Image (tube, rainbow, N blue to C red; front, side, top):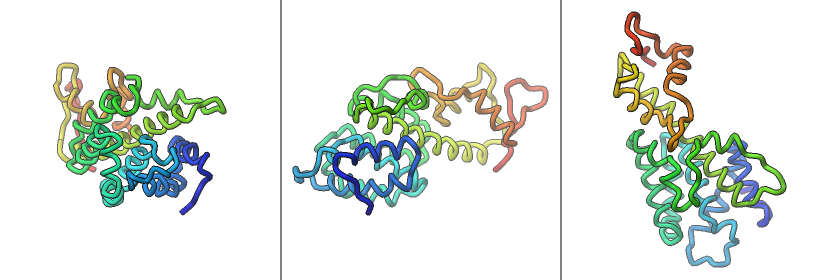
Length: 235
């Protein structure tokens, strides 16, 4: 396992997440998970006992293993006691998140990845979109560890949303021949939830833009003579 000086362990794990470096992040994760598995280990450094890096590690394992959860389940089994002691809210959240992924409950996952769902243990993040928060990041020597860790958490949640969005779209394409997406159709709201296109009161990407992208990709085509209806091409 790759090791880092204790004083710099949090920045490498954070930056590995922010810059999408799964190989480096995977080498750091065992450090956090091994130190946090024993709740009585008070000699563990503060970096390893911090809640956010552990959640980042678990979410990352859900991302890289999706749809399998074997790696995540091994980790959560070893630290469940610690998480319950540290933050019951965080434990319930990550457990619900993994359950919604396992059961393909995309609407539930969309709700769980809204800022309001993890505000209680992350520190009341703003309601702006996850992508907007990350794109506004400016890493400098003045950036505090807490700021970087929070950005990393928000980013890895966004990565998960994007990955699940693609999976949800594959399921939708396999299940429906047509999609009615006119302004008055309830299908619009259902698609927005299922594809996790919203974040709080904002939108990561509009449904119309998403559909236009999929039209260009050859996944759908407009139904001739019917406004807002799309013919779905099977995957």
